[in-house]
Image 1 (cartoon, rainbow, N blue to C red):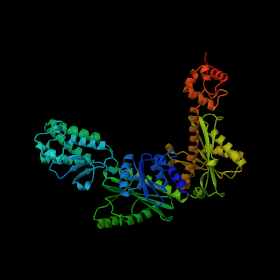
Image 2: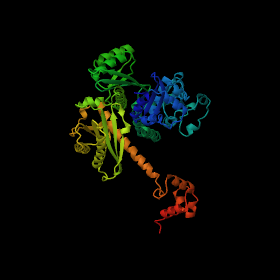
Image 3: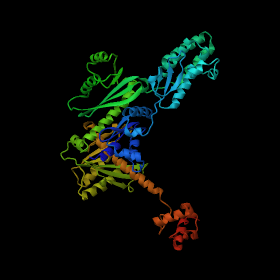
Image 4: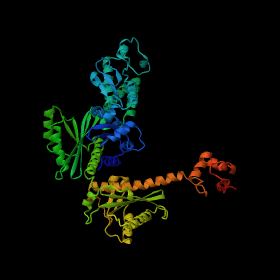
Length: 604
């Protein structure tokens, strides 16, 4: 299979979720890293024929493989993209000359009265507390504004602070306690800094408990102004409190995921350091006899004996001899390590996103391993006496019962055979009669194929018992007995992972099929649906260009264009007289009379 075909296949099967994508050359070197809200849509855009950007064209010429990492949202994709670009320095990313780093909130701990500031740059040159990174500058400004309102921490430069002799405007508008002129004690200011740090770390519960106690204390002492101040702080903090992604609340974390197909196992280690998603390390194993648990246990020991572990490791299943392993790791790296189940909240939320990455990677691996024969797994699972060398899939699509289109697509072991694709406009069947429409296209196509002596070994219909019954009846009518029939029933909430596969006797055989076979059948169904939808769109677009001139005798495409061009549109033609019409090149007096009478025939 050529690189071009392989890339097209990869792009076609990409997820539509947010994340980052990596383009690799023939030497498996990363040449470009980008982010996307919709990976499939973004990556596909590079391969559009309409692309005329020189840099993009040059980049596409060197792409030999594509890898993706799914994230929970575009914000995380942005941070991950920045991290990976710094690490790999891809050739085509360097041309962007974008050396920005993400902004942080910085509290300087070297000063007796620390300030809170917007920070961007090298953290190792500054002693203090850093919070972030933030993907939007506006969010940093908002948080700084909020901390000043709630905690009244100074934001001025040290030189300005040193030379103040009276409070500045910030104190007058109640946004600073004026430590510059000793209006707050060092101890109380230190407590305000401590509370600010708790707030920025997301430890709002302990902060709210402390403020509630103070509010009650002030209230019982009849210090109502102070109690009111505490109440306002509690209100502002509660208004901001909302669920955060696990990635933003952890300093050190590894999430391990595993996915298997029986023959192949994929393991990913997703790394979070200093609250930043650093991407994933990927491992593949081929071992038919070992279970996922056995491979995971073996991997865990080998990996962490050679890689420094974080404080928390999220695991998908129990690790054998975990107590002993953790004891050895603690001695080796002089740190405590905890194993946490991926079912525990809030870790389960992020683990699901990571597992999706690993599952998708396994699917792509299986496709690459069996790319020479896409029907191989189907033949293995169905175990039919006749080898399946080609398959045809039928689909019916309509818009609220109208504009019904039928489609059939043809596949061989090498992939789709587009010269054998067919579309059908279905007009002689009652609206919303899906069974009748399916019967119509099955009969038309299979009758033709029998005449041409090109019969399929496998028929797939988009639907359940009703559609399968139509296929059985048509095969019986045409005296075709060797063809297998399968139906694909859409799953709960139309999710593909809930799809069911039915055989000719309406038995649900989904659980007897491998993941690769189910994926192949779904892809054929999706291709048939795509082909039908494209036909509908084409038909709809053609209607948009229909004109009142189309039904006039003697008016072809060229004369229609001339008339519309001359009068600026159909409204201009409608308003013109016979004399005006004769001024158009190619329009005689006789033809002008026909046009005029036709356009005004319904007028009283």
